[in-house]
Image 1 (cartoon, rainbow, N blue to C red):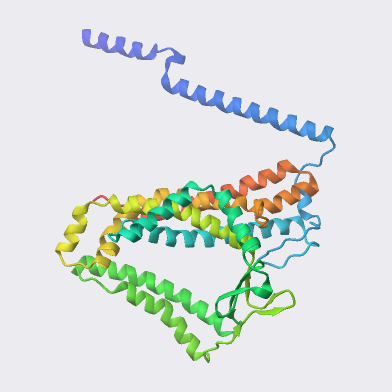
Image 2 (cartoon, helix red, strand yellow):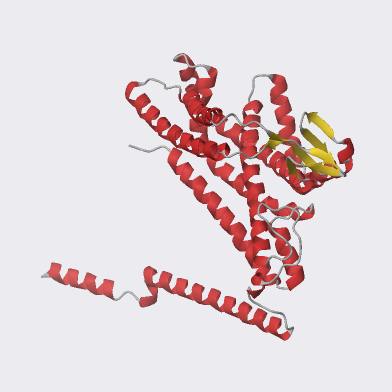
Length: 398
């Protein structure tokens, strides 16, 4: 009887907990109050801004996107003229930003990895040169580096008539870098298709080689075979298509070069500044990742007879990548966001195009909002890919 009374008293005590003292209830209330406060603040800012814009007779909305832009853009990956709409002009700016970010990230990762490995070299001169480069580039602000390379192209390099030709068919002048490229031939589209097919084949070959090594312990010459497939198949296609080799060589006509492929001074200065600056940080990330691998791993690899190149590719780098990837992602995002400094040297990236649009339409809020959304999209897309890759190479516990 006493036990039942005790259980009843315990149950009554649990039921008599005050409503506001329940942690779950309080957490829900706090969240509701926070959401309401943020909503009220956003509503106040929106209505206040809208009333001020109406009072000053400033247009709002994104209706200007369909209007004629009436300004030229110096560089474009697609056809564009001043008669096109603001929407197309903004799209050109997005493509220019993607071009700089994509090429810059690829070169930065390669250069930074090379410098990081060189920093750990047993050769005293190589190690010190890499260390000096890293210290100098990290200590100079990125904007100052952009100004330096911009002045290098315009103030130091000669005019097109006195252009430097370090390699036959490559000309450097204050109009940029111009070099010869192959003339378009129908065989090239088949080579591109075969190249993509070769990359897919190399991917499946890598998976097969990994499973084979896990079962038998035998190392398959994956790098050589993959290189032969990826490069050999397009080469065979090129040979069977008649080996087209006609080049589009730039020629000096008047005051500038015609033909070939031209890299403008603005694009060259922006790419050099971003790559050289960010590669210094990537090099330190690679160095730290390699040093995070225990020396016992290297000694064990040497004990079983692996060569230095095999030790680096098969033992050190696969483990170091798990340390390198997260901070490397941040540097990729920094490079993409730092590309917005292109407006300082006149390269028509997205920020530059939006700035011109704001000056013509007066719709600064919409313009700034578009910049925020576009760079947020770039950052989320880069983070999504790098997080996927990081999970793929992570250790799986059994």
